[in-house]
Length: 498
Image (tube, rainbow, N blue to C red; front, side, top):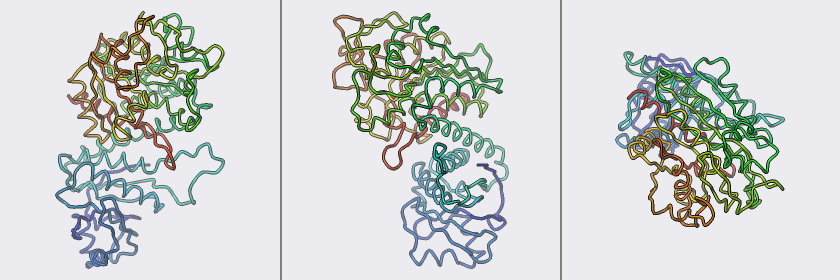
C-alpha cells in the first residue's frame, strides 16, 4: 500500500472514496463542510435522517453525492469535537480503515488528519493514520490453498490531505515513519502467525540474514549450538535439549550512528514452540504456543522499522531461539545448570523456560557496551492475570528508563504499566541446592520472573517488557498483534530526537 500527502481543497480531489469526519450534532469537519456545500446540503440531509450511529468509529458510506468528483463519501463518527483525544482518534481511524477494507476500493483520500486531537500534532496524526490503515488491511493467508476474500480489490493507495502547504515536508516524513512501523509490525505478525513446523530457530535466523542482505547498515550474526557451548550458555542450552531443532543465537545490528556510539540493545524471547517440556502444558490452546516467539519477532520488526526510517542511532536485536519439548534427553525438574554468568540455577519447572534462555542472552548483551538493554518476552501467564490484554508489564532497574518507556507507550497507544521490582520478592527464588531457583511460589509470578532476570542485568540500565497478554489474540481473531513495536519504535524515535 502506498501513501501520499497532498494539500488540496476537498472539492478538487478526484477519488473513489473521500473519508471525512462527523462530530455529534451533525457537525461536519472542515472538509466535510466543503463537500456538503458543493452538494447543496446533501450530506447534512442524510445525517438528519438518523441512519448513522453516534459511536466514535461508526461509518456511513454515501454513493453518488451530487456535484462531487468522488464516487463515494465515507462519513466517520468522531464523537464530541472537544473530546477528541488520542484514544478516540485511533477508534476513528480503525473504523475508517475497516470500512475502506470492506468497500474494496483501490484508492481513497482521507481528510481525517485535519482533525484537532488533544495534545497530538499533525505528524502524530499522519503517522498513526498510516499505521492503522495498514494494520486493518493485514491478512495472513499465505498457507491456504485459496486466499481469503471475495475478489474485491485491496486498497493500494491512500492520499492523506493536509490543510497547510508549509507542513508538507513534515507530513511526508511522518507518513514514511508510519509506513516503516507498519512494515515492521507486518513482519512480526507474519513470523508470529507461522506455525512451529515452519518458523523454527533456523528459520528466524534466515529471516535476520534476509533483512541484512543488501542493506549496508544492517548486519546479522548467527551463533550455533557449538558456539553457545563455547560461551558456556548452559541455561539456554538446557531448554533446547529436548528438541531435534538446533538452537540459534541471532543478532541483527543496525548502524545509524558512529560505531563508537553505544547501542540500544533489544533482547527478544524466541521460543518457536513451547510445550512446557517435561512440565508439559494442558492440550487446550497449546497450538497458541507458536506465539511464544513474539518477543523475538517484535525486536526483529523494530530493527527493520528503525532501518527503514534511517534513525541516527545504533540498535542491536539479540534473539535466543529454540524449542521447548519433552524428550528422553530433555531437562528434568530438579536439574541444576550453570548460566553464562556463572550463576547456577535449579530448574523446578521446565515450563518457566523463557527466563532460562533470556538470562544467557542478557549476559551476552553486555559485550555490546549498551546504552540500555530492553528485553521483550511472552514470559508469564501471571502478567495476563494482572493486566489482561491491554498493557504490557514493565519492570526496570532504572526509573528514568521506565518513565521514557511509559511515555512512549502512551504516545503510541501501545501502553505499558510499571510493576514493582523490589528486593523483597527475590526471597522466593531461593534454592537449597543452587544460587537460585527458576520459579518462586504462585504469588506475584510476573514479578518473580522479572526478579530472576534482574540478577543478570546489574552491569547496565535495563527494562523488561512482559508481553504475554498483548502479543497475540485468541478466538475468531486469532493472530499475532505486532506489539510492542509501536512502543519500542516511539521510544527509539524519542531517543534519536533527544
